[in-house]
Image (cartoon, rainbow, N blue to C red):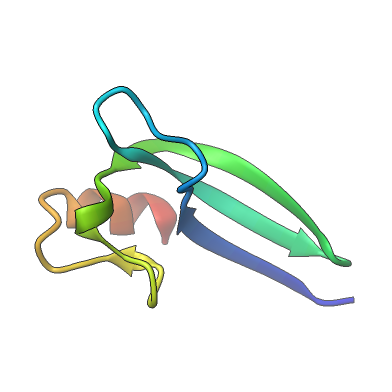
Length: 68
């Protein structure tokens, strides 16, 4: 029984301004649950390989504080 918790940019939902919500993804026993953390981000400001905001992100400190 392994569990993982990650913050991901949820690309399946696009908001009116073109941004995507950041979600906490909890995986346990092969099942995934998503919960929004109330922050949205443009895809150009997110590094999808490392699953974290890139250096150009204007509110990188806020995102790191709320997800860490």
